[in-house]
Length: 182
Image (cartoon, rainbow, N blue to C red):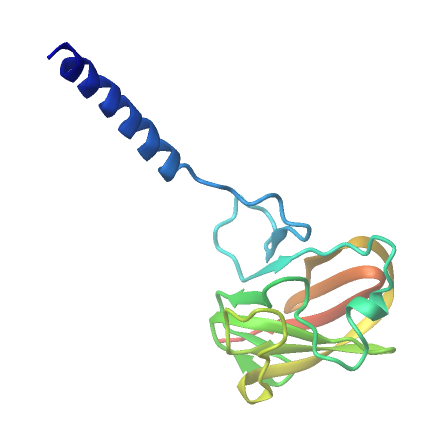
């Protein structure tokens, strides 16, 4: 009888410990290409955004940009999942109207200019499932010299719109989005 009274608290304690270890979370280590966000306006204190890009930031680490984002090939615009760009207001990309919504952002690097692609498919891993038939807009980006170890995106305000700058290694690619006049 004494053993049965002792057994109940010990059994309960062991079951409790077993259930706690089964429920413990295993968190992934920090990603080698961490996710980041660039937006316009860039201040986190301003909630009325025009555009926001969510992307992963690979680093060169001694590798050539031409190996990581080859010229003439569709690139995911960062690492891991394809970058996603959200427009909160209607914008023009060249002569194409981009309605508010979330899109994938792809890039085709080139020697003298890069092509930026806004695509309606989202939640894609890399550019492996890129399908041109879902392109909403394409526009050219001018190239200037830069020096950025980690892939970066930034926005600046210009007359009647914004510029998006993609910088990585020796390249800064810049394209424009124009405000829609109502």
